[in-house]
Image (cartoon, rainbow, N blue to C red):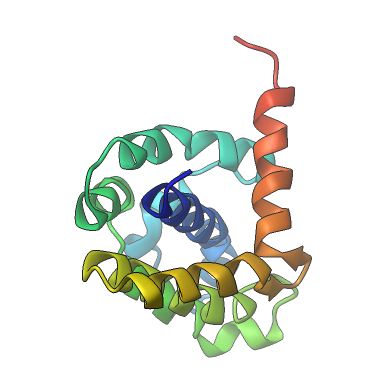
Length: 158
């Protein structure tokens, strides 16, 4: 496993959580036009994770941070910056979805990506380590990635 590959996994997770923007759209707090590609992901957690795997594979095939991020940005038409703004939106505070809990994680993923991109090896390793134990509303980020990836291997081939 490489640091770039781990970054891609974490970016995939941040975009996966972004599908919950539908709750803010439904509440009238967010303009739906900006988020239509994320909202197009399935609403069920495991199905949405499966729906992100093409972008994840394409990003893992890239040789650079910017190339990997471009795979997500071109598919969903939002950047990590946009997702950070989304997770910082005040409307999440009254929601029982993750939202604000993902703000810190997204900031850390952006920091990790920036350090990798700038070849700041010690800082990238530190950011990577802290992300492995970062927590959100249902456990650690590492546990969530593992749980979601196990659902992929449990799905029958079709």
